[in-house]
Length: 141
Image (cartoon, rainbow, N blue to C red):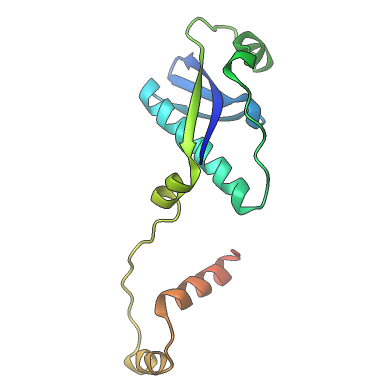
């Protein structure tokens, strides 16, 4: 499912800042317009993915016609809005997460032979066991 949210882009001396007014003014930036667009996509995907993982509900998206750039600029205390604009950012969170957030990484590790033999004989899944141990060690759920 594709999620679409309006993003307010404004030019700064070192690039562009991007703000999502519907998402508690979630923000990101980029040194070029292209990078700011990519960062907006990544920021939106990451925010919505985290909400889903934590069991939260995403706020409703405002239609483009309901976004008032001058009001946003005033709230953010931005004086120069000559190059500011609002653009809709669309992302398929599940597809984006699969490619960027949930991608597995292959690791090589060394074990004593006796430990490898006993674990293999017990039918232990090495990848799963290592993931569980790392999560416990890092305090992740």
